[in-house]
Image (cartoon, rainbow over all chains, first blue to last red; front, side, top):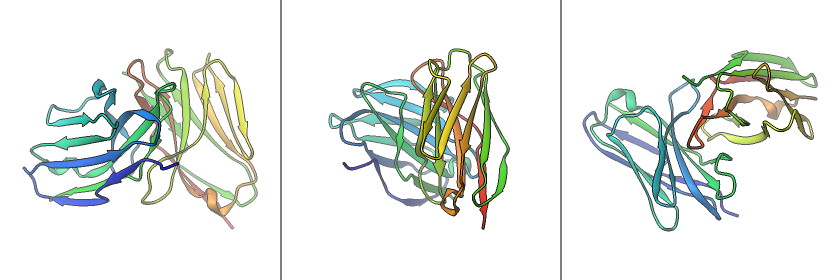
Length: 113
Length: 112
């Protein structure tokens, strides 16, 4: 069974640019959640996608947006990057019968200069 | 708002001893409490979880206890080993949308 995968592993961008991060969910999982983890802190919920629809959003501005595709993979897009967006971005997938059980990928480390 | 407090922030124990990490949650509607282990450069790994209809759950050297009245839950690791060294996070389900509210993490150091 393949776990959650994320790409790229690392990314460096400059302020004002746009970035797209990708996530492939674990086999059999139809829910994807995205989190932002700043250095030395716990993850902060960005949003969740269930059956290609946004299913809840945390306290993040609209320049954070996402998509979920029919194969349940997902993208996180961030526009107009700010220095504070530098963080580890984590994707988690959940099985349909237990959407609060979240299994995480390795994350994408984003650095904004 | 919803929050989860986690203590201690750092815990150093001798190899073979037990380690206990405690969390308190604020939202009485929370009904799912997972614990994650995060090693350097990796994503969080789910190690054990408990739901609000259960008071205790054990999996080999790891156990979790839940006190709904006090809104406390704890992680217990017995017979600690060097590979247990990592940052441990507790989390609680949010009021809606299956989001998890996370504690700030505990850095567990196992001394040889």
